[in-house]
Amino acid sequence: MTDDVLDRLQSTIIARRGDDPASSYTASLFARGRGRIAQKLGEEAVETVIAACSPDPKAIVPEAADVLYHLMVLLADAGLSLADVRAELERREGTSGHDEKRSR
Ligand SMILES: N=c1c2ncn([C@@H]3O[C@H](COP(=O)(O)OP(=O)(O)OP(=O)(O)O)[C@@H](O)[C@H]3O)c2ncn1[C@@H]1O[C@H](COP(=O)(O)O)[C@@H](O)[C@H]1O
Image (cartoon, rainbow, N blue to C red; front, side):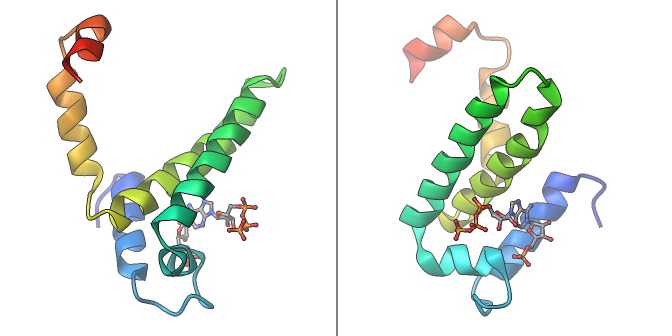
């Protein structure tokens, strides 16, 4: 088993595909489809923005975890993985953010 919680979560998410939606929130998201998963990701992102306005910075943490979880479900539904995102971030390493915007 990997030490990285994101890698473990990704394995759990992938393993839930096709499971009974009644037995697993992740399976219920897969069953409802890409649009619903994307909608949930958007909702969690908005909740993160709201938490960012809180006087307590720690309020951001659970919302950020919800964003990461739903983003990983979206990636899995699209046949993508953290490795794809890591590769993209590595590609950007050492470039300026301004350069990156131009290269998209
Ligand atoms: N990390 C998460 C995680 N983060 C958030 N959530 C769920 O995301 C939902 C977001 O809350 P909301 O109130 O917005 O949504 P809701 O009202 O419950 O659901 P909707 O009807 O709105 O879709 C909650 O039901 C949370 O439980 C998660 N559900 C699962 N995981 C991980 O996924 C694993 C597998 O979970 P199951 O698929 O449920 O077995 C778990 O062990 C966790 O490690």
